[in-house]
Amino acid sequence: MQNNSRWHTLETADQVAQASYEQILAAAEHAIADHGTFKLVLAGGSTPEKVYRLLAQAEADWAKWFIYYGDERCLPVDHADRNSLMASQAFLDKVAIPEAQIFTIPAELGPEQAAKAYQHIVASALPFDMVLLGMGEDGHTASLFPGHQHPKDELAHAVYNSPKPPPERVSISAKALSNTGQLIFLITGANKQEAVKNWRSGQDLPIAMIVPENPVDIYIDKEAFNS
Image 1 (cartoon, one colour):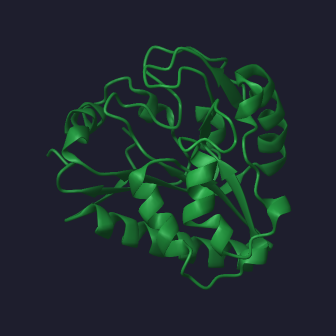
Image 2 (image 1 turned 135 degrees about the horizontal axis):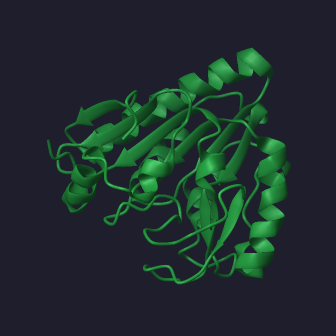
């Protein structure tokens, strides 16, 4: 557990989404004022989807936003379980971010080919301005799973044998996800209690490998927080 992490415990998942949404918009304004662009890495999952639905109704300087994905499942582009399809339907199709500035992972090509393609995209994007991540019941984040080994210097990994279906995925690496100005973890639901407890006690979980230089913001609802 990072020493400089900031825990924000809220009553509900909706409040987690609202607080995260507000920080994202503030970060975008700051980044655009500072260097003219806002590079955001999206997460999959139900709580991020709530955030995206809020963003879809916001006013922002969308022409300056650049969108990336922390991970993707190796499924057809129009498959309902693709993170990119969820983000498009909830958010990206409803705002004026230029299509050329939305960098989906070509996971339909298979893990190896897609990871190689995305490594180049990540290399040209770093450092990110903000990364959004969730956490699974086993302490995984993005598609970085317990017990899986990847080359530490890779910017994106081919993932096989995922404990959650589908077994083949692509994930940005812990090293690249850590290379960001701001990082938000979104954690909700009672089923996350044990993983949160293990993370806070210093267990060697994938989520603990994400260590940006700046403080991490953890937005968590009371159901997930186990003090």
